[in-house]
Image (cartoon, rainbow, N blue to C red; front, side, top):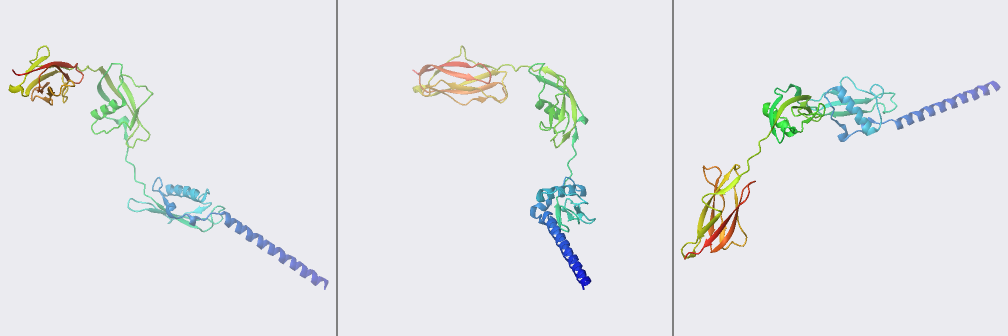
Length: 320
């Protein structure tokens, strides 16, 4: 009897120990499940990836980054997840690709068996950039500048490059003048900016600098008028009288007209019409002065670009 009780006691003890072991294992499993992250909780727009290339490696890199972003966990392929042979489809120009990620058994970071399938955006090939060093014509010719010690600006250099290299389409936003070697009055190095979409590399261009000729100053004269004085006699009955005045401008600038202004306070006595260019006569212009009522010493000022102003004294005379 004593032996039987001993056997029963021993059996009871073993059973109790087994129950404790099972309970402990269950708690450990529950704890692990609570601390791992569920891939299937990544949904909506978060499933859309834009990899840097259309291959599987780029897709996996983008997927790992998205998992870290959404689940706040760093995962490793082979340790935390797997990708089957048929779980990757490359994106094309006509269809999105896909990548299926499955949490691996034994991962301490991802919930076992959970999956997520990402949509992959197609990465279009970037246009090939033009290497500046292969520029056909690097001699840019002569720049006419303020002094021979002046260096051409980036704007002037870019313009010259496009002028001597047909269809080159270089823009100021594509390049900068290198500081080493420094620009001189005979040459400069143009370097493509890192964010230029069209150009790469650098090129040494050469040029010459000459002093630009100063534009000759315009000079105004009034044809047929001596001592810059003009008498206008009103028509019969002291009616209005129109008088045309021809203005000559030496060293005139194409498209520029003189201006004519009657001194303030004389509107009732004299007015000036619009100035017009005389056809087929370069530097010749016409204005009509309209005399309305008698008055002496009315000052009319003629101006043109950088020319010195010319003043005309008009005496409007009564008729009779």
